Amino acid sequence: MDIDKILEYQKLDSELFKLEKSIRDNADKKTASQMQNNAKVAQERSYKLNDMAKNLEKEYNNIKSQFDIQKKKMDEIFAKDVDSLSAEEVEKLKVLKDKLSANLSTLERNFARIAESMNNLLSDFNKTRKAFQMAKEQYADAKAKFDKTQSELAPHKAELEKKLSSLEKGIDKDIVESYKKRRVENIFPVVVPLAGNCCGGCRTELSLANLSVLKEKGVLTCEHCHRIIYVK
Image (tube, rainbow, N blue to C red; front, side):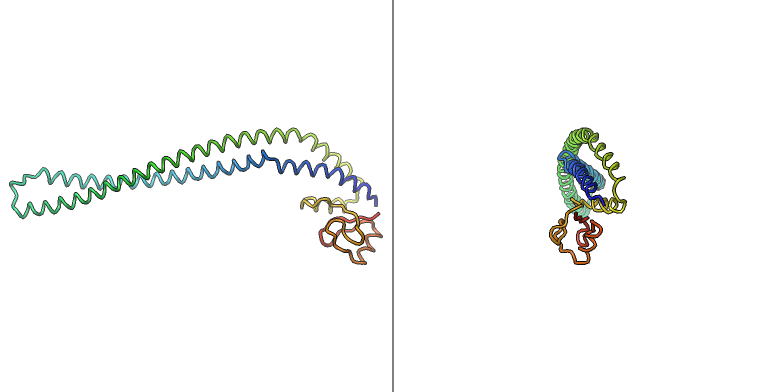
């Protein structure tokens, strides 16, 4: 087996590996991803705030309806001609008026509570809207920068992939398949030399049987890290 071709393949693939890693670890890409997540969180928060606002509105309408009823009853009491009523009837009206007055006071406190909740909700909504807009703008900026970087690197990436595809034709298919499996797992380098009696990657000592197979075939897959070990 021509190990030099495999090593040449790996050397070229090393460039591609570094290029792909630079794309994966690109700061603008990470920023775009983070801003996209921030925008999603802000949007979900705005939906929740909207539901809370609807519930407050419903509660406000219920309280207003009760308030109007109590107020109407109170107005009816004040509209009565007290002089034409008996002492017992006047006393009953006084008890009812006190009860209605207490109810109205409770309802007014509820109005104040809802008004405060509405103000807090509005403030939260404005902050959420600003956070969403900021995240949206920063996402667009970071994505544009990342897309530009990716576009600039694309020709070199395509060139490397083309050369690798050409080199594959001169290498044993099983070796290429094994190499690509490790490569997908981000194990690099995939092809390592024998270091004494150990794998040059994970440093696991090979058995005498495996050493014999390695010396006979020139390559061997490490049982521990699954790298391709070679010996010249």
